[in-house]
Image (cartoon, rainbow, N blue to C red; front, side):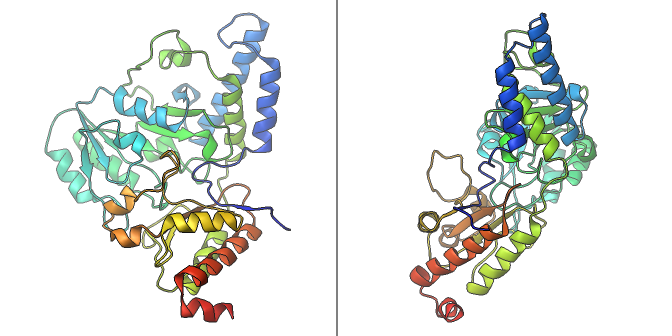
Length: 373
């Protein structure tokens, strides 16, 4: 099977699943405001309720715990600002939609693999009796490194702290459960696993404290005012149902890592010594800056990225790799490769060929050249 181009940037956004497209098209044709009491409104409400059940099932929650938002950023913002906690602790590798919401937050350091230091977190929690929220992501968007959420929850519960988990890069890719993890707040986003952009959810456990910053109607159980995005919600639900079993791409990505490291043995997989989500790798191309790699691979028909895709198209040094203590010169060569629901083996083959060609041309590697001969 031939592919027009290899799309390997699913952590930025994953292509819309056909089942989600079809569900959205049907909802758009039907119309209706779910707050209206006539038949059109009731039909729209029924669609929203069905989607809410599908999203809840994806993350092991009750439908009443799901609050639809405009995406992961709004969900993270709502979680950080809506608890009423005087004190916020965040990991050093959080997404900007967490770290920039609370500029005075205390930062939990990470080790060289990008995993938070639990001993430091324990000391930080014990240092104050003020109401505290701990925000630690499920899987890192750049490296794929998984955080020890169960241990975070255990330490937080010992001091009465609340826990928020940004699971945007986990939900729909691997098993993520609100109650299994034991967290109070969970953020998810549809477009990371084949749903539409512009829709996500903050999942709020049971009676966990939450004060909305939105005033208006009583939508979303009085937790987010505003007419619901019915088509987006319906597409979200359809994608959530389709993604229920997670992704089966780890073998593909492992084959890519093995091949790239064979081409350039001096390359480094960032976070490679830690547990990672199976769809993500962050790897260096020694001596070749990330922006050069992204542009050259794009010309070769391979879409990848350098770090997070939330900086208005800019390629900048990764704060995640900085927090991990990676040498800036090495960090500037980091490339992120992320697979998704429709990734094909041919795409991985195209990546490997393009990466090797670039490394030979720009990296001037005798090893790579010999392997290509």
